[in-house]
Length: 73
Length: 276
Image 1: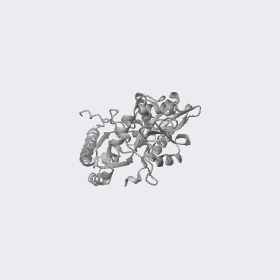
Image 2: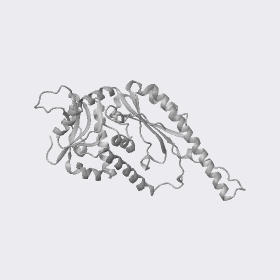
Image 3: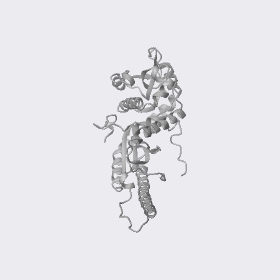
Image 4: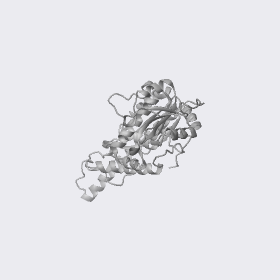
């Protein structure tokens, strides 16, 4: 891939929303706009949004999910 | 200039150039509003000493006031639309000029207020744009494949009591999980070694959770800033390394505008990692 492809996404391949949100909600320059949620709010929103995503999809979660006791790396 | 009932949404900081202005004139932002370059001073004032400018568009006040924003941020459909539009604008700028992406949903009452904010940070912005010149962000993620975290299907020991069989199964499961985590650690070290030869900076994002990520468990979610002339080598080296870890999926994303590195001189983004 060359730099000239910057801004030209691969055909038929959309950037994953989750990667985008990582960057748009926790990256980028933070300016205090006239109307902007505080960083703490954004973090809360991020958490509640993730909770929403998990809870919405947990109904279709595949069977045989690992039960508790997962060791985080 | 804002019409009544609208606010100024700013997407990115860049350097104003003629070709960029022309390119943006044909593009649209959130709600199909035309994009514009917002330089430090308006056209009636003396020319500014720097070419710094925001990329901006008008957005409806009723969608971007504080209450509306809070509600909208819980609405995944709205969030996705704004995020993708914001990103498209940033990418369009990045293809033509140095760019410093702004955090999503940065909004001012009008162009004048936005200009004031740009003026207040102009030195920091200029410096950061220079530092990021000819460098591009790439993401590297490690996933455990679901198969790899399952124990091999072993024949049940005939004499084992149900309790014992359960414990054995748990032990086998733990062993296979431990083994795959160990692989992930080695892979992370390998990636770090590769990156130390090519990258100028790293930011570590939290591993992704939730169903947006699919069934695979994400255990590493790094962003690297790579000089453009090294990008090919970096990606090839990661792809080579990925082949040595069959139980993992190692994914490179990008090229990205430098979202993860925009704040390095003005925020804690690159603070040294706390000791484990």
